[in-house]
Length: 497
Image (cartoon, rainbow, N blue to C red; front, top):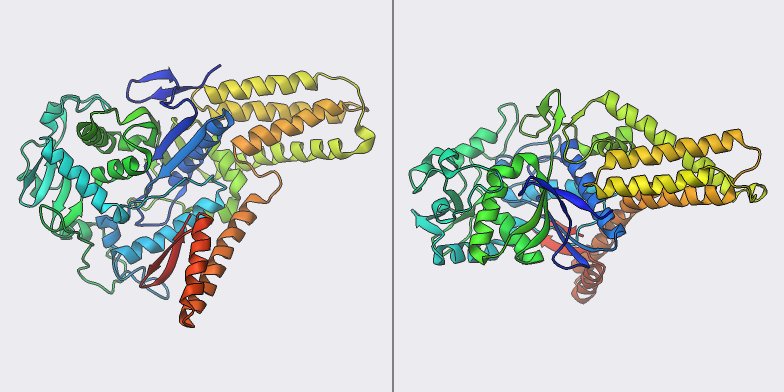
């Protein structure tokens, strides 16, 4: 059975055929870093991670890009916000760096495969301006009072992702923008001036203490004057910079279908004349008490707290117990049930591994467990090729765990070959594909890697303070050769992988 995926663009489950038969271009709409990442983010991360892993299992080379939105009114709203012993940041960039550091730590803790690059909006403004200029030159966008808007009436296919007619689309943007637009559904590509003060005030919390009364966000020069990029244009510019004009898979939350992804398609395809993405995959809602888990609603569980309390494998078991495109509701009881399932799987693995390593157990007796392994391989593969159905894939692994336990409990002589194949199936499907850590090493290794990078940066700073700039530059070059990009800021060095 070949891989088939549910494409939001067509509403159909389709055979997956990337443009390059060997190489998959995967883009995921990442976070706006205005708060700590929560379990709703973690759930989609884990599913994207498993999609990445399964594509590699099928033999594809995966170029995975996940953006970070570090320019946003929600971020500016937290400038100067006091914590227990400090402030989150003195400007928009400082607040963003604070949450990006925690974001990368959370990602490492969840045993995620790394993306090829995590582009940031603030680092791609020239590309954004170039893309907006292209749209203006081609007649798809227009300038109004220093802002630039996309003209939806010039793009006949507008609404094809969300299945809406232009006449049915509600006005986009705040009230002051609507007077500048030709059509209510037009959306901003470039916003004149600084950050919207009303939007900042709207996102501030009355019960928090701030050092800054009216913080200003970052602005950049453009052909239309000083301003800031619109939200939707950012993803188009970043994805095309790193993956080209047409993606194979564009992944994001169901709540982003409209207007964000709809607008991405319009502006990207208007600019290039090429399809923006071959397959649109959308993760469904992650709820808490019948509401979407959301930073803005304040009804969220931070990733770091959940990892510390439940453990990485239990959380991955919980998330993967529902397919990516089904709604999932958080409760402590549901996570505890996932913990029990993880214990059952891990215990079966450990029992089988111990039996395989026992020289007295290496007999040549044949058993029905061999058929069980073969059936598991077929069921797991069919489930994952059926739109990455992790729920059914997990069920196949847990069935194998039960069959292995019965074999060990009911027989005096073990089927060594079947037990060895069982271990291999657990490690291949449970470890390599679903990302479980049977050996208990993944989280520790990821944490250690981060600590080692921090240590090298401390040494580099000491070299710079001592005036040994050539040695400091060498350390930076060595880190970048290993895939660690170092950035020097007013608050000290930071890095990303």
